[in-house]
Length: 159
Image 1 (tube, rainbow, N blue to C red):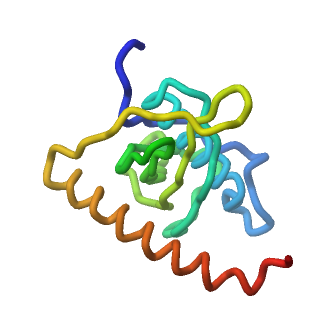
Image 2 (cartoon, rainbow, N blue to C red; image 1 turned 90 degrees about the vertical axis):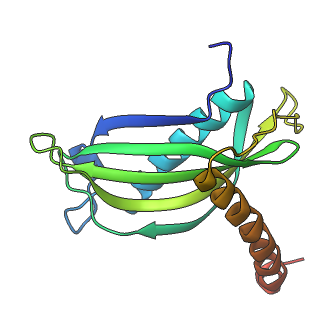
C-alpha cells in the first residue's frame, strides 16, 4: 500500500480457548483483539511501527459467544505529532444469520516509534465529514479529561 489507510476491519471466529469461566468470550481476549486492530490501523495510517500508549473508555455492551463471527472496526479520529487516536467498535454475530450486534467500544492511543523506541512524526489526519469533525472534537475533549484523570491518579503511583 502506498497510501495511508485510515480504517481497517479485522474479522475472525471466536474460539473455545477465548472462553472465560462464565462460558462467554473473556474480556481480556476482546482487549487483545482491540489492541491488534488498533496496531493495524495506526501502522496503516503512519507507515510506521506503533505502540499502545493508552486504552480507555472501554465498554463491554454485550457478551460474545464462542463460534461468533467477530468484527473489530478501527479508525483514526485524531492525530498529534506522533500519536493517533483510534476509535474501535467490536460487533459479533452468529455466522449463519449475520445479524451483527455491538459488543464493545473504546478509544486507543497509538504512538509511532523508530527502531530505538523514539516517537516519530505521523501524517496529519484532517476530518472532512460532519461525523469525522464531531469525532475529532470529541477526541480533543477526551484528551483534556484524561489529563485531569491522570493528575488525580498520581495519588496511586508510588514515587
